[in-house]
Image (cartoon, rainbow, N blue to C red; front, top):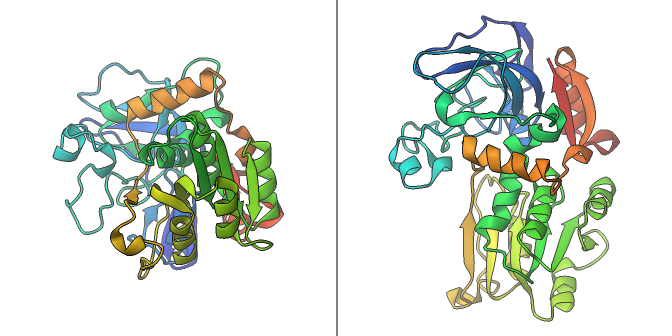
Length: 351
């Protein structure tokens, strides 16, 4: 089969590799639609280490090609959505309700339950082997297209979880730093949770325009104004919840400074290097602030619930798919996505 194989820093591309087979408890899915994620960029740039020879990618929709022994309730030819996080459903973390942290501590390379395109061959390929298939294959309802559901696998689940973990309540004001794909989903999630006002912050004209299109109430351009001062002015003392969706010291600190006393900072960013907590913004530890982090929720029940939102027309993420490529043109797609050309938000890849 054809697959996108990582060989080293900025060295990757389409290769012919052996098609996977399903072992016990596994499934092989023929990929019908996948995407490129910001984490994939970190991998090809050498900012997140994976083993050379790995097939990358972790967002996919597909059709069941083969079922291994022990997988019941599914059939070949069935359309399925697979989450970016593939919990086993049996470990301490899963049984404690923390499916995203499945297998945490099993190995130095593990990051919770993120396996596809990290420790196992991933989704930017014609076929992908899915571990713990019983816990991770979510049948797609009739009438929903691949493009309607593919973004639920990662960015929507992650973005929505920023609002969920932040404990957004009816009537809250929520400020979301960065209106990229995950930040936009965090903004949508805050509205779904009942926020009365959502403030989106970015410095990219295309992303600010998309935020307005998707219903963000107030859009702030950090290039043109003091965002912290403006949030404090608009809210009369600070936001109830600030969601950080970029992963930089500057956005983390600004999110903290935007909070009212006893507010919550919900962090979705992936940080590198040293992250510092400013003494004054933290009220010397006496401000009753809450800082929470979240890894993308996965598993078939999470995917089912997100597809129900789409089916009920509460969520439409198709505007985020701004560009489309064939798998053979994956390097061109990476270049566009990595350089943020042509207003790109997400690219759809069809094997």
